[in-house]
Length: 420
Image 1 (spheres, one colour):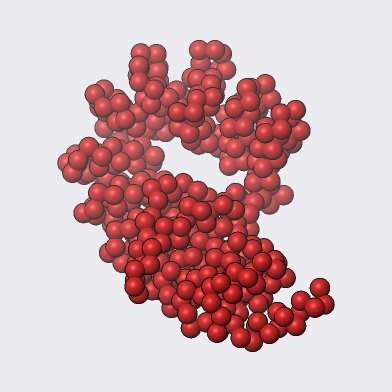
Image 2: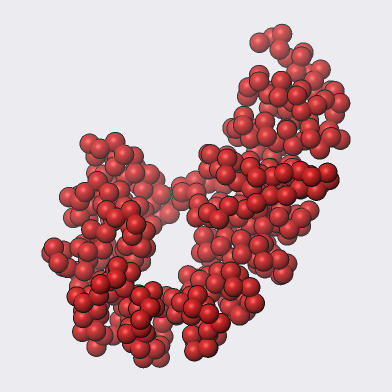
């Protein structure tokens, strides 16, 4: 140990003259080598700086955060991208294998990278991200050396729930670059700051179909009612079927009473996705007069999506029966379905924000199947309150190791959200 220190010191002095091979050699010494490895960021060689970021990410640990932040300020796009992925990887281990940096190809002085289509990752609520990490990524979202860098920073901010960087994400919407705008919108959806909703509303008429769909979904999720007039216009005269579905879905997430006739009309649509949006929208309107039509749809519907939506609507209307043929039981049973559990879970997360519905879920949480316990734990981590804690504590002691682990994870997330 004492003999290693002079070696590290010498390498620190000559870091600028070293090659990627030398960076890898020093990194083999493990965590103690992090300060020395970080010195290679001074190199005039882009390849050496890229390798430095790779090795810092692989080494991991809190001591890599500062040099990775420094990497976001590098003049080279690949270094910025890999530093961004490295920071996310610290908080979400394994991310670097599928981040943008994993697809980077350098051609002369320029780089090419391909964004993955999957963008549904987000850290658990109990994970705390250092403010200077969010600040560095926010700066990249504004001023990254290329649009790919900016788009990648937007994606990272969404995964890390970068609330403080919402202004940076809103600024990124003005790039007029479709990829950057799309990533910024998805990030805003993950952060869920309702104050951002009205600032996004102008994009519901964007000419790019993907950006338009993301913008419509964003204003719906953020309950930006200022966008309702534009959404109604899109439903009346949609550019295509996708725009019509997106707009009706957004309306269904925040319907006014005046939208009730529109939703009733779409309940008879030939399109099962439109019928589903109409059913859940009517449930949120919460007019007792709609119970018969929702009940009819629930009993007669053959397609899964509108049947789940009708069940959700009836639950919001007050049907909390847990009998075998009851709507709430149907939603809970669907948590066992790999194909539709995400839909059912989304409905139950929203429904469980109401205390009467949340209290009804404690029994199936205790007595349900393995998948039901896991999914209900996740639901309560998002929508539970202090009264949910004893029930999640019990799940955290379940005989099934995976159930217990999920119960503990949910408990930590809930306590972090409630700050208890």
